[in-house]
Length: 232
Image (tube, rainbow, N blue to C red):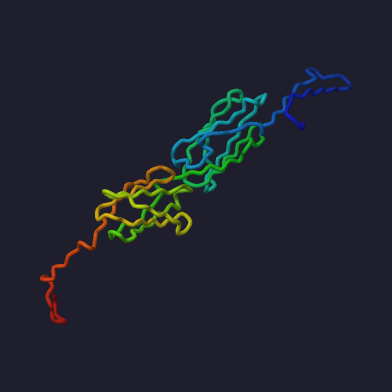
């Protein structure tokens, strides 16, 4: 058959119709089924349930729905499928790691519209923040953030002093590793807030200490000359 329809099939034996003939055989076009939902998008959080819906209501006739979900490492993720052809199907799954997944959806043994899908999963818990040294007021303060194991997402950094909110520059060093810098204008503890795909990074907010070297005093009376090769 070249199109979805209900076909009438006549079966004869010795030029006579066999009992029950002609038979009505529905032919479905699974390509007309559609899918939508957060579970097919981006910035899906790892180790939390997500889902999508498959709409088959516009297709006359019943057929099985097949869903195969493959993780970035090639492991199969078992989906939970509920619903029926007349009402549509709801598919729920729990992604186990960050990265790009592949979801193959077939209805009546045919890929539905848009299949295979490629949702992106993130894990903010895998974001790693480098050491935060003591900084100097008016001098660039820099540190690294590693998102290589956290998936594809947008890293956002917000820095706040007591009275100021310095501009922050986030630039990629290599794939997934970012250099963060800002110029503090206050000698005080600064708060550093990090989010990944809009979600807080564990440990955030972080804190760094900024000093003003202009206010550092040296007590010259405490400095004495010492002969060489003698313990101080």
